[in-house]
Length: 159
Picture 1 (cartoon, helix red, strand yellow):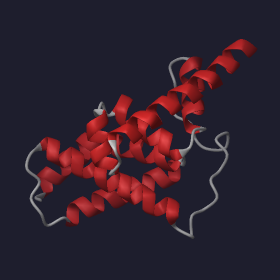
Picture 2 (spheres, helix red, strand yellow; picture 1 turned 90 degrees about the vertical axis):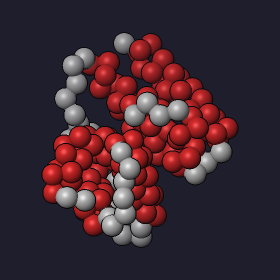
Picture 3 (cartoon, one colour; picture 1 turned 135 degrees about the vertical axis):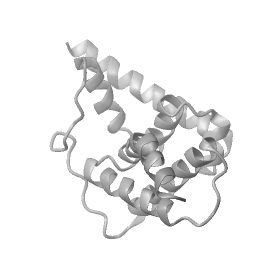
């Protein structure tokens, strides 16, 4: 991969890689590390990536695999509570509440929600990416939605 193609890939996909890593790792610092590692792997990749869609899928696959490895690592730092982490800026208070509710979900639910809603992948594409059965992806999406609905319903009733 030449320098121009690499620079364009970083500019185009850096936010996507960060978002997927943040939803998987629930730590802005770990997500930053993941972005660096994923793009280092891209820079050192010797194979041919045929087109933008292949590059995008390759980056998603590498990001998901890297995050799984980090979560399995015995050296994994204790995750800081969400209040201590640097939260992104939101336009409306409801957006922050939704973000906090999503980040409180287990990693397997956060990942499928991110890939489905933010990266706009189909259930079949998510299943291929995560190496799961499509029914497992559908089940995770359904359970994540149900948990979010109950959590957000409680929050809105308290106000």
